[in-house]
Length: 357
Length: 221
Image 1 (cartoon, chains in turn brown, orange):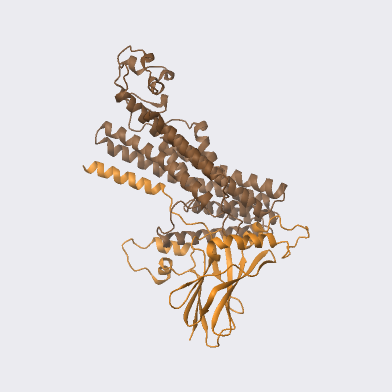
Image 2 (cartoon, chains in turn purple, orange):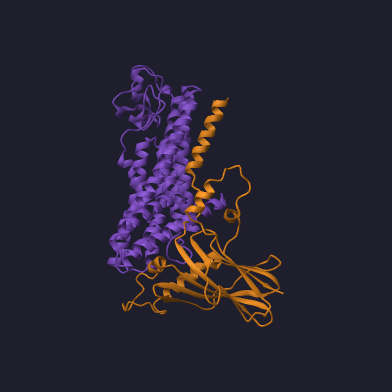
């Protein structure tokens, strides 16, 4: 049956990609120690501007490591260290890195509120700092591992992080494209009894589950609604008279957790270097504080970018609403579907680059 | 229908906001020095690179390598790191690029000798890159040492011998160093203050838009 084979094909393709990729080792940067940030797009875009931002970051980063050294003799340098760490974190998020792309597209695909998006951005940035600290404590402090071993571990975690993004993308594509498309096709073509009082048991197509909404506490057919008139979200997230800004309320951590882990699993190279450097200077506590402050700065920037994405989505839907309600709904669906595809493509691109690049 | 056009524009803008422009963050700083090795017949046959890393990266890279625990890093202890450095650099063309006077790019063979030395907490990587074929040193030969992805920030060092040594070169050969522009918050503010429609940047900011990297032009008659 062509309709069911679609998601199956996507999952098969994803798994095949993972298995094919498994035995290949990831690249570990120009010196074999310290991973460069993976770049999803070519660096030719506005080269002058980004060289400029890179140069500015470089200034902060160098001040940061110099301040850490100064703390050996002057404890009050700590305040300055935290300021520099935060600013460095803010700037760091302006460059490449998968965190902001994954979080903002996830937020678009899942129709999260601006508040949830900002929260996700912060939590995933802090998760990255936790990964870096745990890694340095376990590898450098407890095991006395070399930077070569640490970089290989970081590369493996990076690959894992990208594999998780691919899975996240597959899940979003399934929920936002494959399933709604199947449901829509079923409503249009399946020989179901769409009548008041019609028993859901009549429906024998594979989309029966998608259509019945039994677990939502009520049944649309019993209510006598025309199926095409209401918006399908994740089961209970649908609405009969949907407002244009249908957004989920509280953040569902079970769902969002996958995005946080996907982003947080990859330790940031800057944080690793600062932590090991702090360790070598006998200032590990200051290093940890710096890593978390950097994460706050990065989370802050990503939160702002996420807000921009959510606002843009709101604007697009509002503009679409002037073209009629149906149009607005299609707009919403299109944004979600587009974002879901972006997460998947981004994951595949990064995973591919990480394994074969 | 203009409304449709409007929101497609909005969606496009949103996509741009999400799509991340790419350029790595500098995490490694290198004070670079280079020696051009001449063969006595006016040909360049090798480049000897001397790269001093910043203290933070040096601390990270040498983590766990003090195997005898004497608090010092010997060249032997640093050997595994030097090995992986040179092996990994191959994929990055050793960040060393020579362009002959006729515009031809010169290829290198694998490094013939290499080692790491610890100088008071800063690692120095020495390695010699032989050119595949001798390069006739006439006219202007451009030697560039830089990372186009910005992960490593290279800068030709100033020391008493100068950043470039012309080893065995004809006496008439000279060199002129070029370095990446300094970018600081003041320059950022200056750049931000320029209206978007202004075509001509002030000279110090024009450098940002240029392809100027890091290295030296070696000129022989």
